[in-house]
Image 1 (cartoon, one colour):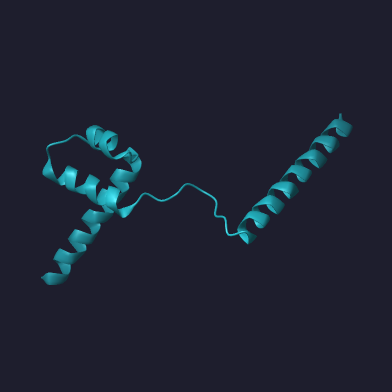
Image 2: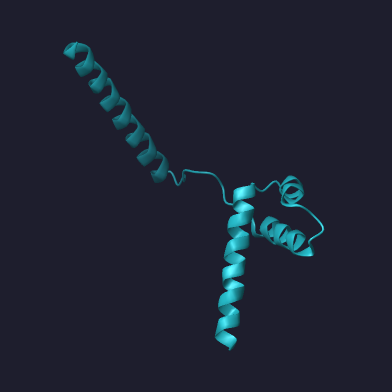
Length: 90
């Protein structure tokens, strides 16, 4: 059984090595990994729609093509900024 385990580990190490080389090569060519960020325009539109209180979060997500989690993350950040601004004025 250890022969199979050793072979599997060797194969896994090769995959990891090739993956790291590929990522390094891509970075050298100026490529970044991951998903593109949501544009400021879409976020602003979504926050404005939310603030009108005319649309549900589900409707806003469908209209703006922003994920629900992203919308809530920006809404929470926006509220933190607003509350910090209020605290500084007093």
